Length: 475
Image (tube, rainbow, N blue to C red):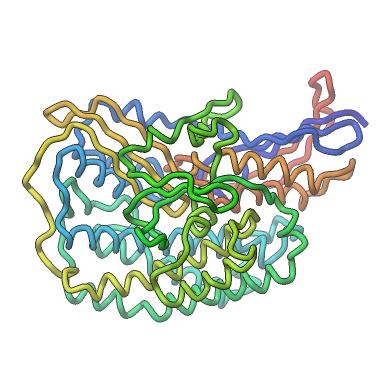
């Protein structure tokens, strides 16, 4: 045998476009594997010159899966730039929309993107290892999954007028109050959403019990962890300070989003358009950290809703209260957050201020610069704007959730490839495990459109002289 380069392109069942290259040694084992984020969006540059109040409408076009996250982060940054903090009812309504986003995104990922691997198997025929195969294999589960996502989307639609790219949050508040009839409609779907989420949890825990060997060797590695937190170290998805812990669970920093540049820097590699954020004081790669469901549950000590907190207690015993490092447990953490979001919907809807018409602050105290932060489904999302006195933007900096996890995804790809690809015979199921290392993070690679038609995987075997000696294709 000779050394080879295996290319997986595109990585399937994620949001956005990426490829993986696996460089093997002569004996068939892996020398190194790379995750390449090979799309370029450029939103930071072409938002320069736009007006700050336009940003809640422009930035959601970064992504068709999580537009609400950019919509709300942009509005929060606009609040800060204009010096117009929203009234409490407006903040409640924004948070309610955000919970709808968490529910629909997390629900879709577990059941429809990760679900085929878990329910049908990593080695299942790729012709059926997809959402269509899941419908055929478990139609009742598939229907419930669709209904859960629909529930989250309906919350977004009721508030923002449509399910994708809502028109709702503006600097200083929101542009629509919630009606009592709309509140009651959302409340009517709560019980079923909780049941479906609990079904997902039972599926995940059953799968974990049967596949513990894979969980324990599938990209398990130490990092720091970062995300928003309440003052009492409770899980927080909408607002709060940022907490950063080390691999042992000790707190390194706790700071306001406005000060993020004092703590976070970004590293660049020549094989990816996506930057690698890290904690400045520890440098790169010593200061890398993870965000998203795994990171958020590692920095939290509790969850402030009863059902999710009971699941959280069980979850944290996996590693006896220490940070959980297993990449495949992202799926478990994601479902616990979904349960929290559904419960939080009820908390918000029962707040007396939720039906108030005091939803917009028109008094501005222009600051010229502001940072908006939110916990998008995939992790901490930061919008940072600088504007002229007329509100025209001079500089835009975005650290997208998936960017924080870039190192972790790259590390996971390399580790999984080295663990599972050990000899000359490389079957499709092994390559799917490498893809699953990316998929577990539920990356959203700043993509607002999706391909229509087939998503092929092409594997080229290349000899040391660069000649393609063999090509395999999966349609």
